[in-house]
Length: 332
Ligand code: HEM
Ligand SMILES: *[C@@H]1O[C@H](CO)[C@@H](O)[C@H](O)[C@H]1NC(C)=O
Ligand SMILES: *[C@@H]1O[C@H](CO)[C@@H](O)[C@H](O)[C@H]1NC(C)=O
Ligand SMILES: *[C@@H]1O[C@H](CO)[C@@H](O)[C@H](O)[C@H]1NC(C)=O
Ligand SMILES: *[C@@H]1O[C@H](CO)[C@@H](O)[C@H](O)[C@H]1NC(C)=O
Ligand SMILES: *[C@@H]1O[C@H](CO)[C@@H](O)[C@H](O)[C@H]1NC(C)=O
Ligand SMILES: *[C@@H]1O[C@H](CO)[C@@H](O)[C@H](O)[C@H]1NC(C)=O
Image 1 (cartoon, protein in one colour):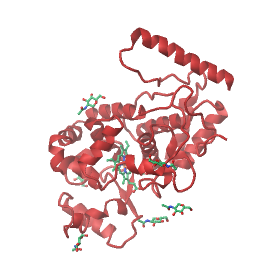
Image 2 (cartoon, rainbow, N blue to C red; image 1 turned 30 degrees about the vertical axis):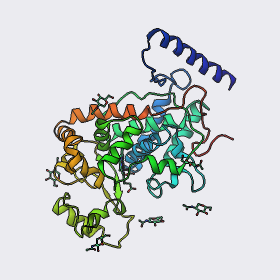
Image 3 (cartoon, rainbow, N blue to C red; image 1 turned 135 degrees about the vertical axis):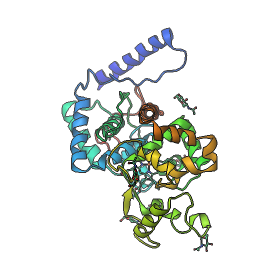
Image 4 (tube, protein in one colour; image 1 turned 180 degrees about the horizontal axis):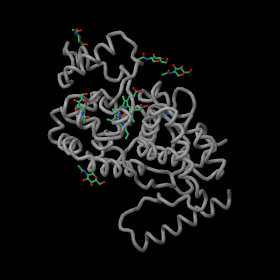
């Protein structure tokens, strides 16, 4: 432990010197080779675990990607979303309760990592690597994951309720939530493309199906045949927990069909379709949706860049936070 601390503060010290020589602005302390000495097999261990989980259940790729997003938007990427506890923890926030999943897979990855290199790899970094591997295994772009995050000590449902966007929100409010964590409109659109994989419950879009915003009619931006499918799948007073696919063209494939769907009025969530169909979209997100729908390479490049930016939200580094032994609990 003492050795760990010394090498960490030494690293901080060398960074400081490098920064005195080269830095204009403050630079992120995360690096791609953070564990190259302390856990050289880390990336292959995580990849193997994610591969095995996705082989068992393809949806797990989507669930792991979402966990990293829900981690990073709340208190930075510090694995706060993984902490168990009472109903004041993030797992009980609206966006997570009965919805966030993949915790057992994260436990399995952590345990495989601990077996190879005990006490050095954070749960926050595991989430970042697992999210990248999930995208790659789904056919999406790859990127080099920045590492060196440490795990946080708190998990607060109120903070999560404030920070995480809701599918019922207007575009200005959604953009504001990204801006609050240092992201911009390009990130809003590219990261929303994460909805090219995975599932959503009736309860997250049924507001659009019968009486949208008190109009007495469905959301007019939802394409007619998809509307009638969804109306039968999610009837009034039906089971709000039933799930359907976010991208009807290619559920398990990470591709740009999500954006093509938006051009056709086939976004599932209200928060998806407004990126193309709302008034505010015209001056903000619509043109990027169009670009991504016709240029898959542009989407892949921007998505990878935005994932790196999202992974850089307020990381704990150096001697802040801790390396959790169990991702579900702060060390005793
Ligand atoms: C405006 C921002 C966003 C909103 C309102 C939103 C909302 C939602 C909702 C309501 C669901 C369905 C959850 C359920 O029914 O249990 C969902 C699923 C999902 N979200 Fe988002 N999301 C947003 C942004 C993102 C971002 C930035 C990513 C990742 C880059 C992402 C990745 C996913 C994935 C992969 C799923 C499927 C999860 C699974 O199948 O387990 N979302 N999202
Ligand atoms: C959380 O748990 C406490 C104590 O068990 C309870 O009094 C409170 O109503 C719960 N709050 C919510 C939002 O469920
Ligand atoms: C959670 O954060 C809110 C908002 O900052 C704060 O008022 C509240 O006291 C925190 N709750 C806990 C349990 O720390
Ligand atoms: C968002 O930020 C990225 C750099 O992180 C930049 O390339 C892009 O142009 C920005 N987008 C907008 C709309 O400002
Ligand atoms: C739609 O919702 C509004 C507001 O909640 C309500 O006043 C109205 O009666 C509803 N209309 C129908 C047709 O159910
Ligand atoms: C979904 O299932 C959970 C857990 O079984 C339950 O508490 C909740 O009320 C259900 N939600 C909806 C929208 O039906
Ligand atoms: C998506 O599915 C629809 C209907 O099944 C089809 O008409 C359309 O060509 C598909 N688009 C893509 C990009 O696969």
